[in-house]
Image (cartoon, rainbow, N blue to C red):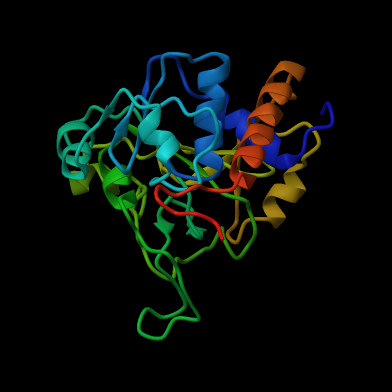
Length: 265
């Protein structure tokens, strides 16, 4: 695998899914790395939208948060938050929404609210943000999430975002306009929805991953596609570009921040 880590393989596999010119609503973390890697490699005209209101942003380093000044400084436009949701997302102008979560179930529903009972949770998570609207309205969503039986669960503790609901056409019957999760990119490979049931099934594996590993990492009885693909190993160009992006990011985030009018004693 050309010495690539599983995180690198995840990011590169996700980046490959993005076509040039598509409009992508980006989350922070692995989704941001994947989208910006695609922009630096094969999709220079990708339109990246972050929830803070930046459109067409082209950051040189990965942002720390949606409020990172790097996004506004390199954006084509900065618009009010309500306009991002009403004029772009809810109007059907977003091709891909990239999401993460704490939990996912077999039908691609997501939890980023609580672990445990809602009234007395063992862990209170950051919450929904704009994810429910992205999951509802984007033409399709991609989810990036490291797999374990604690994160890939048979039953969510709380449903924050709708995937395919209970499957078997339930999402379409609900009236949700978006297409739902088209792929879940994990650290063993990729899950995709079954065309009839919409249940997530193993569709592709990284070169050094096995079906047994995938099945053990998922907290439900994972269905396996009749033809599981092997994901091509990262090329040296892909790896070099991703590693350079991360190196620039680390260096930038280590620099002291100089606030206007503030003098260090």
